Length: 265
Image 1 (cartoon, rainbow, N blue to C red):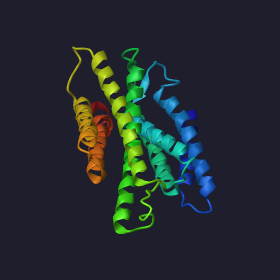
Image 2: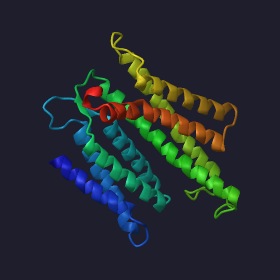
Image 3: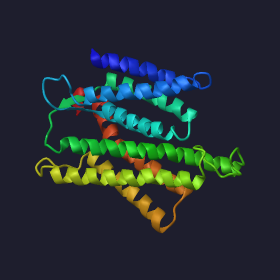
Image 4: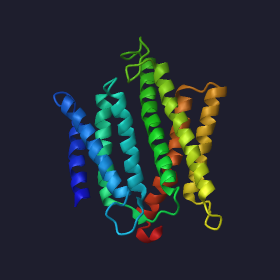
């Protein structure tokens, strides 16, 4: 019942944050923060398996996607202290509503902890999702700003992006998230391989897509460092890597939990 109450109030606040800006600008900004706080408490209750008869963590495509959205909103909340982004706030409000409702509909399954390092592995994996999610949001802003610059739109003369900062600075910020996400993803994979039991190791969809995503991000960072990749070429690689990473866990669990049903995974 407590989780349902948290989800209901968080959803209402996210809806307020997603309303058109203008008169409600201050209200929507506060609503997004309030929804984010309650969303975080809901994640602790649900993913942490609080109140469940068996100690463990609740895993599934919806909880992981929900945690990713929560982390992206956290990044935005920090940045909005410096530069307000009402259009992004509306998008994140809608994403927050979808994330909370999806978790209610598809709560995942409670799994016992396989090892003492399992929570760290899970936290690192979700952290990489959040960092790459933030990178994708910034990359879309970068692409939009570059299109405006080529079309001679507002801010073109100053060479400024959607964050009100110079394009080069926005680009550097975008790839700071990529670099941080790559480090966390690498740690996740190393920890996963190190703690995996030999008799249960298998190249399943999650493993294959995770390593494919890692390879794409490694190629992107190498291309940017050695070949000077920038603009659309770089963001396309980012989108491909993020898509593969999304398929690694969220996509595979979605197939098992939704398309194949409870008995499919």
